[in-house]
Length: 155
Image 1 (tube, rainbow, N blue to C red):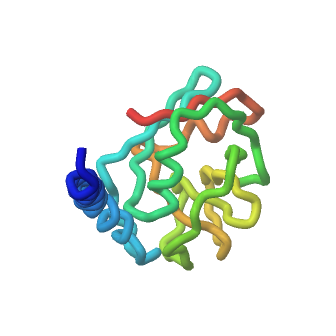
Image 2: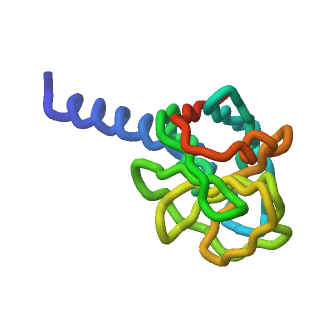
């Protein structure tokens, strides 16, 4: 094989890989506005105790990073009087994060300083959060007190 045909094949391979990656790169740039809470078609299921909840994730870099980690088997526990938390195995990206409004029970958030999920079942307000999504059918299972193994997966 000649040296020039080897270089041509390499150029074709590199060009193919770059063109295949471009759609993903443009997708990764979407959702940079933290106030834009556009739902995606990505849904997750959280199962703990005798309960299961589903949530729809929003279109932001942190939510996409979280979805890329699934499935996970972790622990869910009470924290304060308004939320349950789940400690993640690593921190999520904070690209495009910033303050958001209209906080409400049923929000699924990421707590930046500690690197955990915060699942709210009562009113809250905190600047160090990134909203990842909302629970689809309410948050009643979060009211059950205690610590449980939790399974989180895409549906």
